[in-house]
Length: 201
Image 1 (tube, rainbow, N blue to C red):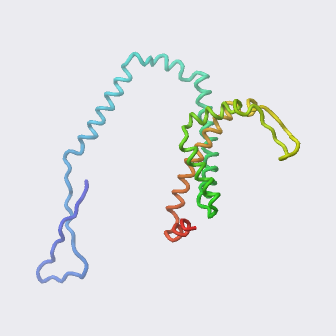
Image 2: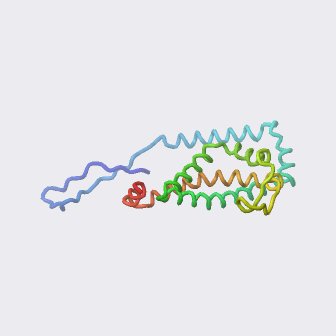
Image 3: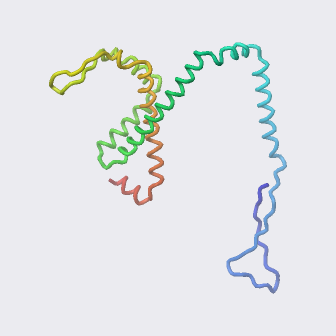
C-alpha cells in the first residue's frame, strides 16, 4: 500500500526540537478501485483466449499435425541461426561504427554517420532484395592487383547465395541500429566535460 507524508508534527510544548530535524506523520494512501483495471484485463484475456481456442476456423488439428514437421523445424533452426549470426556481426560492426562516429577525424565521423543514415533509412526488405539480385548489376566479380593482372574471377550468382544475401542484409542493418545504441550508451557514461570536448573536437 502506498504511503504519503503529511505536514510535520510540531514538538510538544516545552520540548526541545533538534535543529533541522522534523518528525513526519505517514498516512497510508487508500486506493479502493485499483483492482478494477487488473480484473478487466484478466477478463479480456480470458475472452480472447476462449475465442481463439473455440473458433473452428483456426484448424488446431491441422496446426498440431504440422507443428513439428521436418520443414517447420528446419525453418525454425535456420531462423535462430540467422538471428545469432547477424546479431554477432551487427554488434561488432555497430561498436566499430560508434567508435568511428566519435572520432576527431571529420571524414571518419562523416562515413559512420552516412552509413547509419543509409541503412537505418532504407527498409530491410529492400536491402535484402538488392543483395539477392546483385548479380543483375554486377554479373561477375574479380580480385586482382589495381591497374594490374586479375588473380581471380567468378560469378556473383555463385558468391551471393540466398543465405549470404540474408546475412548481409540483416547484419548490415543491425550494425546501423547497434551503432546508435552503443554511441548513446557511451555518450551518457562519459563525464560532462569529456562530452563537451568530444563535441568541440
